[in-house]
Image 1 (tube, helix red, strand yellow):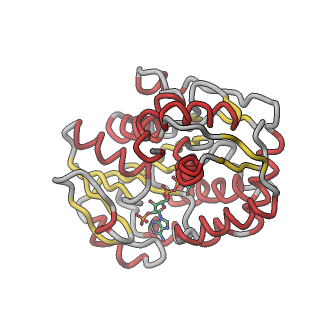
Image 2 (cartoon, helix red, strand yellow):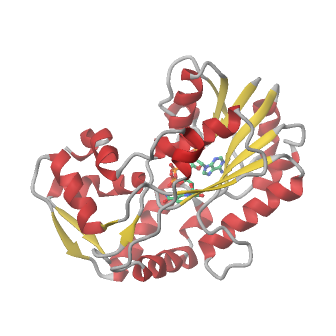
Length: 281
Ligand SMILES: NC(=O)c1ccc[n+]([C@@H]2O[C@H](COP(=O)([O-])OP(=O)(O)OC[C@H]3O[C@@H](n4cnc5c(N)ncnc54)[C@H](OP(=O)(O)O)[C@@H]3O)[C@@H](O)[C@H]2O)c1
């Protein structure tokens, strides 16, 4: 049984490949640029791009289950070639809803609907914000100032290894038809997150309030650099800003799903920061 993990360069995909290999499973990783994937040795890596569906035939050869990103165009083309799969585990997002006015939740809801319509047995992972988003602060932390438009905005950020752990359980032990809402174990403000990163960075770091236009410019550049296409649209960025503003001074509710599914508690933000300390030094 070969498991296909798409988005080989992604934070979650990389962690998932490692966990599946540790569990003794046969894994094939697919990415647009396999040479840059930095995957553990011993894993088969193939080039495949959701924008070019024909390329998936080789990637899917002999595969029974697949982990797939929702946030990319071209999912329909992939699904049209994946009809023989026993299961697709889709990396969706908290609140996914195809009828939502929020561009982010709507895009993920549409991706879930496409998977349902394809008739392939599925499992949906709906994480909230990734702790890995904070890697974007690395250069700012080294420079001693983190700029954010909403320093008192809360988020219950989740460690990519916990999303991967739930995905690994889903891919190896059933969970068909399950919708898993995933968060970290605690809700922290931006200031609290910076304070925990400061400890592992071992240097003083202060937080400055960023103006919204600066934030928009920065986010657009990040999306463009990652080649995430429509994810960089102004509509998505405005949806993000509205979400952050709504969580100023309001803790985000957490879920216990990581523990329920994997049997282990979700890693907290301090643990995530320690795992990524080198990136902040
Ligand atoms: N960041 C968050 O807070 C958050 C929260 C909830 C849900 N999500 C979901 O998780 C996804 C990943 O988020 P991330 O921030 O962690 O991004 P990331 O690590 O940069 O990963 C994005 C992945 O998308 C893949 N990808 C993009 N375009 C593709 C294409 N044309 N064909 C094949 N693969 C393509 C990339 O794969 P390759 O470059 O290797 O091909 C990459 O692995 C998001 O797209 C979103 O749907 C994110």
